[in-house]
Length: 90
Image (cartoon, rainbow, N blue to C red):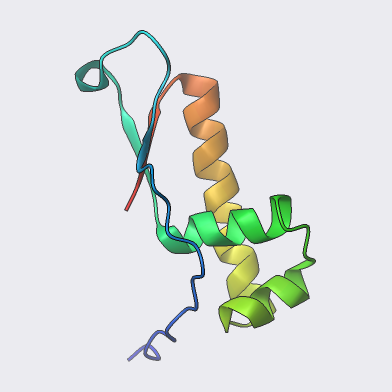
């Protein structure tokens, strides 16, 4: 039985929950779903310029868990940009 998941501290609540390529209706696009946890980890590293240890402490998770979340966020964002997909933030 896996360990119960720790509650993450997320200090970011986006006002916009969809991003998409211009000029293409949302119904015609594939959607990549980005969790608030993934978005928060991405922002802590790329915008707030924290290192992984500091960002993990701020979110209340271990550094390896933070790394996995960040890697997932980066992969999803790159996929959306490369392949012209919409990004939905849950």
